[in-house]
Length: 154
Length: 424
Image (cartoon, rainbow over all chains, first blue to last red; front, side):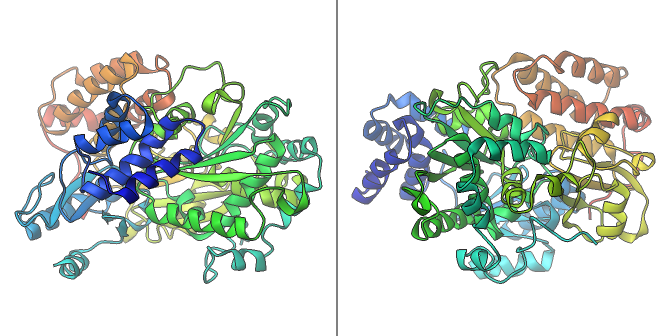
């Protein structure tokens, strides 16, 4: 169940928009924060709070890639593999991470700490290659830098 | 040396705080605008020649003038901060480092079109940017630049931040509106245009971040000052984000019309390792690539259109001689394939078919006739979709094939790359 605070937060979001459906996107972020990912229970609760049919929430959760429909590790590492980063070695960055973590892309470490993803452009092309871990950007990556970053999370 | 206009505060300490902005002349343009007639402001923006920096290059003043004048109809401004065109990172710099410049531009735009509510649709990945905007908006309310009866006038305005959640298509203005209304971001068919039927069915202007950031400067320094920068039909300062195989990748603010060669060699320090340039994308991956002989092209809307490509977002992606163009084209096409929203058949099915053929060509399993097949498929998609995503995908691919056909054919015939491959 969503916490009281979360329900209140979702209710308050309705003040921002001319219709309650607009609240679905920010509400799903609340669900993701509360449950760690988008659960069916969470989606049904959002529909309930906003007076929508469940499908009106499900269809949003499945369309947008940032809503995790499955649990992810405590640290979600997303490496940009689009053109600017690829030109400067994104494939190599993915390989380095994959070896150091002992997992392939789309996998999570057994201790549930790290999930590795390859993603499209994150808008940080002047500091390629780069990756995002949770909300933070890590830029101008090298093998040494990755080593240090991972160490800080272990 | 061109003195930065939009980026002028970017390296000042605490550039994102309202005190810093006010100390550098911030919100003076808004104060000035509140004393002007709204038609005068719209005329000024028209006269300045400002054209949309999101990529379409439509006259901003003209766009504003399409909004009905009837004060009883609610109107909206949406700032398109869904910066997602690969290679592009200019709006992020404005948002993170000088958010008040954007807010001031939005406030002036809202006053001019009579909007009392505005949204900033920011891509979900820009968490820091969203936080900076929320903080900046709070500061603006507390100083009386947002809220009810701003600075003693009759004008009231609320600005809200709405975070996207990872969908390139939301950069398309009608898809952005769908997303803001809490739906899947499927583009709407036009007409009706958003100026008539936009957000929540009301007249709406959608402007890019960089476009809105130009507005305070136009009010402060005048339309003719702005119009005097760069080419007459495409004036003003422009942010060029350079990435790829250059010595000094980064964001450069230069007059519109600066030649591509100057951007790459003078500002971005030339190609790494003194290698030769092979290809350059001038305006984000939707823009067909150019080659060495095109480097003297002025970087403005019309000059690039004349070359069969586009200024787009001004994102310059540089590829050196070791780059395998087939692989680069595949990476770009994989992106469009991933981001196609699935609404219309030519884009959904066409890009899927193209990606399958591209993958086999890249991976040494290409068949004779595959390159002609790719070009045929491009023709089946182009001009047949609701929105420009499908067009962008095939323009990018056609640009690659037209300039480097022998490299594609080499892949098919020899089952491998013509070059050693860059990227490490």
